[in-house]
Amino acid sequence: MMNIQYLKYYQENLEKINGGKYVVPFKENLETEIEIQIGYTFPLAYKEFIYLSIGQPMIWDSGINGWISEGAGLRRQKYVRENLLEYFNFKLDNSYWVIADLDGGEQFYAFKFNDPQAEDPENPPVYYMDADEKKFHLIFKTFSDFIVGTIRPQL
Image 1 (cartoon, one colour):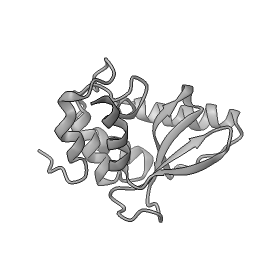
Image 2 (tube, rainbow, N blue to C red):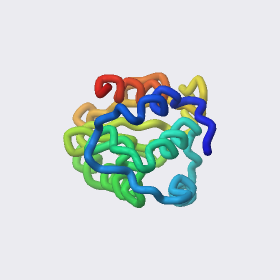
Image 3 (tube, helix red, strand yellow):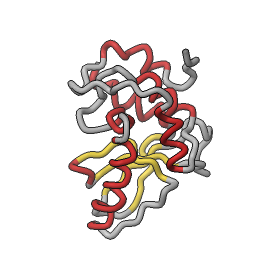
């Protein structure tokens, strides 16, 4: 059992979330397998999110915790980088982890590993990117604020 430090609001409201009809499947050591493949360690807030999301409905049908299902996270990262961003002539380096997308990936949210803007590296800021604009906008000061801002309207 994980001691939840950053995502208490999400933990307390899991049963009320009426997100997607799809449930995030269980996969033991999922984040460790992904971390080995990408060469980065997920921040604790994101690890809490993975832990709490397993077996739960997706927050959005197309995104957020759906990105962590087995293999889907890595496939989606590759898709965003190679297809959508190349189409829009925008480069996204591997220090970003895309956590949700909108409009088929033309807009998305991401956090940056080892972000120098993070007040707490274990709860990094979340950025919004519109591929047409070709730049990131800070949208939430922390990943936990992003989750609260996403689920609060659904409750």
